[in-house]
Length: 448
Image (cartoon, rainbow, N blue to C red):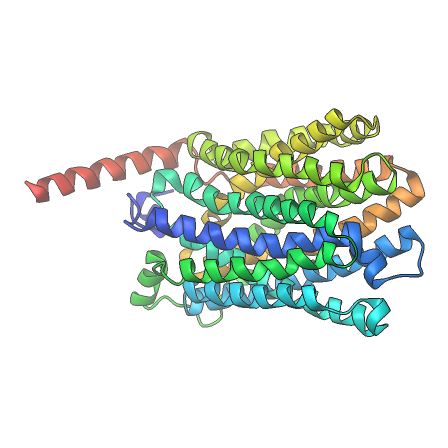
């Protein structure tokens, strides 16, 4: 890769607003994750009885997880829309619009009637709102990560995008802390309060995001006249291989999370291995650790490369699938907590930390939002229905079914990492050092 090619990454030393943009994008990621992932917790613990009563516990859980999956299925459409607009009109408008839509949809979940109150219309409304959530969440990530990436210094892309990626465990922590507190309210309020409370976060997020400047890379693309008429078509035509690789890389992280966290909550509850409170406490501990783990992994990619981190982490996840279930099956609280922490902090956070910088670097600036969003969000269809599939596997084969599925997803990620080029290897780091030194020298001469 030439030094000229690195110019697509923005200013060598970043912009003066780099930190503010990273924090603003990260805050939005917190809110969107709180809204979207909170649905997964509610689906695992409450929605089976609230919206699908009369069925067996397993059937109710399956129905709730199917509704969860609908939102994930809508995310690629949101990614297409958000990516198209991000490449055509800018990254910032997508950030603001997606947050508004997500906030309104989440608030509406908190006021939906249950099956007992409205009959069949209740689960139908739940599915509709979940689809809107999926569209908003699918559009959000590309804008947030590219804003942070394109404002950041070349040598610290991992660090700055890691702040955005860390917004996801922060949102997960907040959602589960609220659910942990609301569980004592009893009845429908136990799941309504977390969704209603999200409107406060949305207001704060909008204030912060409205103040961040547009991406300098997008501004350069616009000024040079390189804005593409149909970025989605162009990136699919020219970079379909990288899209497929990105999907494989992402499946290991997001579908692996669906097994080790989303399904695991339901598994521990239904098999009486842990109470709701114990499960939520374990998830809160894992989320808190995950905030720092994500940023640490992201910074590590700046030092040793994105691909290297991915190779080691997915290899570990391949070996961890069966031991993960053996450990929680002991029913010992300390082992359950340790297992969930390990699954989240290593198998998920390391991959998320690497994706923040790696995915944007796989695509040219003019189609970056579309390419990165497609690769990131299409895999969500797999992860979205994974808890549903995992529940079926458990019914048919016992715990070994979910364990092997987790291993399979990790193997897909490992293979994709083998096939995907390193975008921040020794040569790129050397060129970045040279460019930074040259620009610093030029600035010194001008000042003199």
